[in-house]
Length: 444
Image (tube, rainbow, N blue to C red; front, side, top):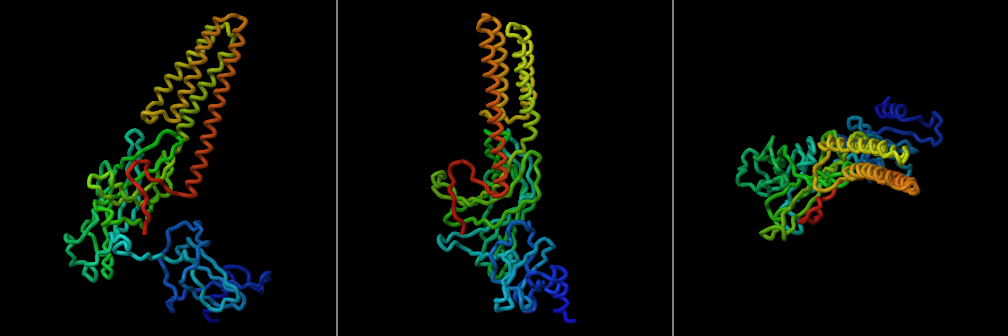
């Protein structure tokens, strides 16, 4: 039996029943082989990707796979790439050739690297980033820690055909990357000597690993239901008319923060506003944006739930007669003191900002409910019997309605937050910090 026949037999067993086994369509499925000997397709390195990202829906490339005609149909299956990816496509009997285009997901795109922007003539610097870890986000100091690897590549025409060991790097241009919003930078690994990655085109690559404390603008109005964009701003001290940053890729290791859910990072290419510079020049910047959403469960059960229970108990004085001032005030004042003590206990867990967060507003609302009930108990008990019960009943209705409306608002807020988190997981992305001096710039 020939190798071609044995491969066809194995493929029928592995994929499904053949025509002789009684299929309805009578199609024979055959695993094909890569046309290595003919040079029709070059195997690419394995993609370290999730096979559920819609690769099968991508368009077909111009590369080809060799298939074996069966007379009825063709099925091409590539079961490779470390067992992670499996792609299939079918061709009708009308397909005239024995070559079909390979799925786009199997090819490794190789973008053309340019030395300069064809429109502006600015030097192009291609940046990649790999985020190794994220440290805790400090709500009080408005900062976070990050450990990342920055890779810069650019084409130096004078190094075309040069020997890497004989290059005098002191005379070669370099982008001089720096992290603009860093409070502290510690370079763990630095290859400032650089290396000539591809002498045939003069491609230079510089890699450095830094561990830095980054200043962050945290908007905590919706704390603890807030989402933040942790941003690292990479800049170069060269005018945008002379140098332009191009984003290549950004990857993240399996970073974990106990209080935050980390989403897929993104790049944003920007230039500064010339009006914000004393020299009147614009400078290129690359923003590495890491969207995160806070895990609110601790604040929900440890703070909000306890405050809710204390306020609910504050309705107990209405079960006593309005004339029983002593009994009512003893309950109200005890709960009020309990709420004050609880506020001091949880103060260290709350961010200290100059405005009220969502959790602050909720805690204050519960405190005000207890305060209103205590005042009402003292006032109503001294009123005439004719109006005492009426006013006491209306006061109970007002407090109860306010409590219900507040919690309906909180429930709606929680539902909106859940919907936003799901949308962020499905459509990852970030936005620029809400600050002056930046405008978007299209990448080449």
